[in-house]
Length: 242
Image 1 (cartoon, helix red, strand yellow):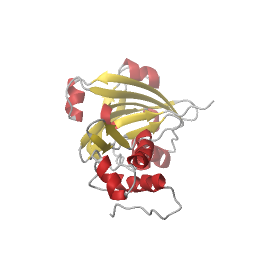
Image 2 (spheres, rainbow, N blue to C red; image 1 turned 90 degrees about the horizontal axis):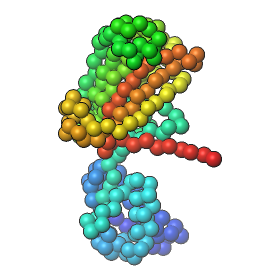
Image 3 (cartoon, helix red, strand yellow; image 1 turned 180 degrees about the horizontal axis):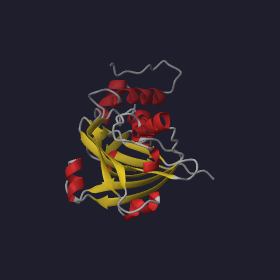
């Protein structure tokens, strides 16, 4: 890729630089945390002032695509998993929307006797057996989230389903179950010993814990889900309108 802009173009120089930087961010040598060329060197190479370059980098920094470190340089921000609280999807759908490739480090199912918390949500007896789906997911750099999902017996899951499929797609297409409401609790936590081992971090490192209580259109409970996310790989985005 040639690092150049058209000084004769009617498109403002800072806008051309912004587009150029967006292309650079996606290049293998720069994406996911690499430093861009030094500001003074890049400005000279493009034949522009440092102020023009900063117009472009300031906008990308505001969008969360670049991180400026005083006295060190400007680096490309690592892609984060972003969930918008004005809508919700399965993990697979969230990853696809974010353009993030992920892999399953662990996927297992087993029948478990529920405790008081889950039995109260499902409105079933304590000790009733329900299907638990455990998933450890991440990217090529390693795992970044661990999920446990518990399903109401009413759904009819057997444990032999293909859980590598998007979860809510599976429920809707194979069982005519439509998840329509999710109530969520989000908390910051210090990683326990077992969570730290799963996510390959140190015990006590910050993690984000998300509880999801999922209901069908009749407000009947379907799924209880709890997830533990590496704090540096996940963010929530909230849209608020007045």
